[in-house]
Image 1: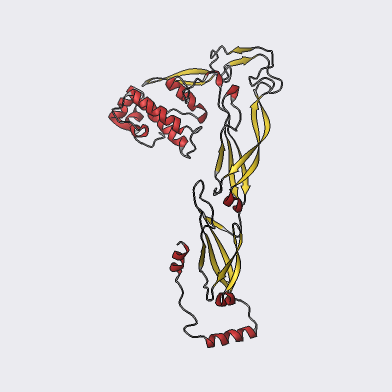
Image 2: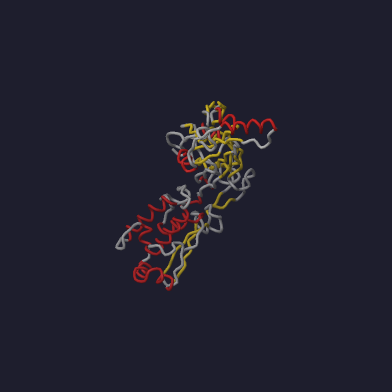
Amino acid sequence: MATAERDYYELLGVTRDASADEIKRAFRRLARELHPDVSEAPDAEHRFREVVEAYEVLSNSERRELYDRFGHAGLRSGGFQPSAFDLGSLSDLFSAFFGDDLFGVGGRGGRGRGADIAAHVEIDLGEVATGTKREVPFGVAVPCGRCGGNGAEPDTQIRSCPTCGGSGRVRQVSRSVFGEFVRTGACPTCSGSGHLIEQPCEQCRGAGRVIQERTLEVEIPPGIHDGQRIRLSGEGHAGATGGRAGDAYVEVHVRHDDRFVREGNDVYTTVDLTVTEAALGTTLPVPTLEGDVDITFEPGTQPGEVRVLRGRGLPVLQGFGRGNQRVLVNVSVPRHLTEEQRRLLAQFEQLSTEETYQPSEGFFDKLKSAFR
């Protein structure tokens, strides 16, 4: 069972003494919220299957009584198995329960929802900071201009399907120890269209739709993260015989930038100082998302120090404010010295006193400073 022994009443959000109408209303509400065509939640499909399974049990008086008395074990011993369905038949299952489709409108004539389409774009980290736009090409199924989307050659006959009576659906009745369960599915004669075409359209060959190249402008908001998707509602493939169009999804990928590491809305970068620069102090250009910024490093700058550039990070996605940029100081110690350089360094060390080297922050103190 999909629910892994979860309580069916809890899944539907009703009490154990809820009436049949209360259970039906709860299921309809949850189905509208969780159907993957509507919800963008990553677990929407799983949760939808859970509430369908719960409704299959609680809407049937015999199953409900068995469940109330013996729980999930009683259902298993009674031979109950949740219905196997795919996402394309969820609205059919809803029709079997209530005699209409998922959203309470008629489902005659096979007016199926069009399929979704997807593409991906690449942007730079700088464009994440400002937001940007992209022109994205898609191949989209649109209603055929020659036949108007009905799939028939103009001025030829379209007959109502004799098997389904024009509904595009047929009902199948299965029987078990709990009684009858009615399912609906696409009519095998007309493939769910509800009609039979005498002569297919020459342009679309009876499909009712043709592929058209289309370019959509996609607005990418500031602060977007790598791998996130943008949904363009109704911009997908046209539905069959006038059904509503699917959606277009654009997945955004952020190009790697060697200068920065992103952590949430903060960015991290490093700056290299020589031993002399760290000891005497210096001013160096440091890359930021808006261009180079001069930063002054005081005499005695230590390796591992972190400078925080507040507000120089990335914007909060669909929110307010920005993260920070944290600049980590790296001091480059010379590896190859001439004899003269060695002599001078040795002389420097002889002239050094306790005051020359003052204790700096420990590692954990530096770590805490970096996140202030």
